[in-house]
Length: 126
Image (cartoon, rainbow, N blue to C red; front, side, top):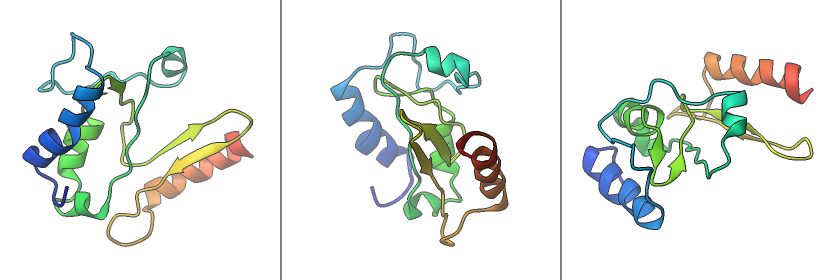
């Protein structure tokens, strides 16, 4: 999708995922997700999950549409979206990690990401 808009997010992103796997019946697209599972609660969830890295086109509107459709919603089709920021870290088996960095339009991470990943590396990744 070339630009962040309601149409492109709904028709080109959400609809194909919903065709593949329906969200739970309780899901309402217009609701803002304020209590996303985190930490131990997320570890207890056994279903599929989705994490998204914003592209440069997501920054055309200052990341507002990305935040509204990815970070403020709970489901992408039947995949839980626990992500609350434009960046994330996932711990995989056997001490492997996936870091999802948001390089924005500058090709660099901001101070909040730097702090997040530095603390994570020092405390958990070692």
